[in-house]
Image (cartoon, rainbow, N blue to C red; front, side, top):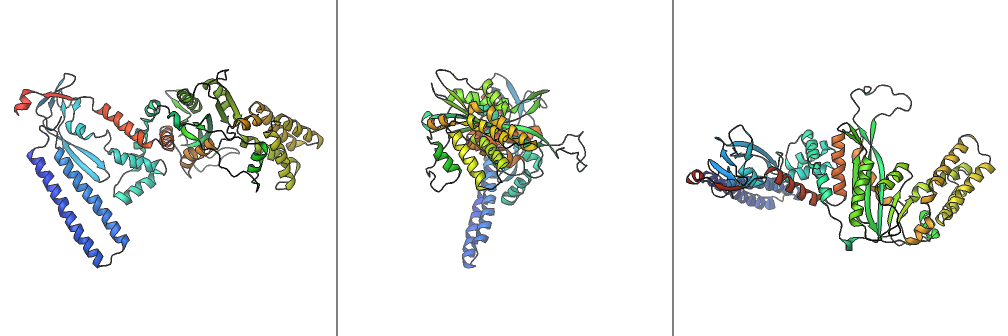
Length: 511
């Protein structure tokens, strides 16, 4: 489309000069290697020199490529596919482009209805598929691939050391937010996993974690005395949810108890692995004056994924901790139980077991064999379907031992928790069906996706930056990073370059 007038004699000369310079540099590098062998140079010395030379060669080749593409002179006037005629601006304009090989200035012609009006066509930009940012797509990807794991100050120093590129933290942060703008569209466009890659049990699980936010301007100055109970920073809640499938894992109460207590004779077989994990994460925030609850947003996204993936008649297992709002939102957003397809709500066993240990320490010393036996006996009974009787027995023990004060209050609280979740504690049925009964998948993701990046020492976030970082980390942990890069580049290219050249005008052809 742009070949007719793009490569002129001047561009061809620049291209030849660049390629000649690259060839000369390669010859010099060959002679340097020969000397390095004779001088018994260390591997480290050769490795560092070669890498710098590779970067220099890449820069030279890139310069030659840009020269060959040329300024995009299609003549004084061209007609676009929308029927509009646009004219070439009198003088070409420079544009800065940062790549992994360094920074380049691209001199190119602009086309519009007239100078200083809206630019309708930049042939060279369109030919090269340049991004809206001055940072190339590859460098954007590298910036953010490092940025989703490390502080942006460290990213800047790392790329400065490796590539010799100078980028500001502000540029990296802005790039993070810009890249994340494509995340919602990408997630919406994702199809269901291939059925043959799925396990037989469909599971939904979610959890919440606080993200430390920048102190509001009206808040007390840093370092001032805090009143009792006042937090050092403000946190905003982020919710992460996951939908996945897994094969059934049938166990007995005794086998699971032996596993949890690390018995020598415990089962050694590895449980089935979760398949096709899809994570969503969202920050509770204010948008256009309205509160957006991250948890509701996550549940809505999980519901869409379940609708895409659930097979006819397939049981859905909802696995969560004891947070009441999780069960409430599950009822509002996720499918209801029906004769055609069951929905099984399960309380994470790891949120019931600690209550048994708390109860044990009200009657026996911490670390004692008696406390361990106390928990083991009641845990096994819970797994056998006797959770209600276990709770009743705990209350009777409190009365029999005449617990009072804080001990009595603590026993009441933990018994109330267990009693309020008895409808989700039919563990004997869950074990026979092979359902998962612990939230290891979501607990691990909550720690990795949110805590490991968002709660490092001294970190404070603003809402746009926190939401962007969470979106990109979820995409990465899903294993969709490369697919997302392809998607966002395609979407931005379509947005930036909507027009095609139908033809040049007769005047242009004559020129």
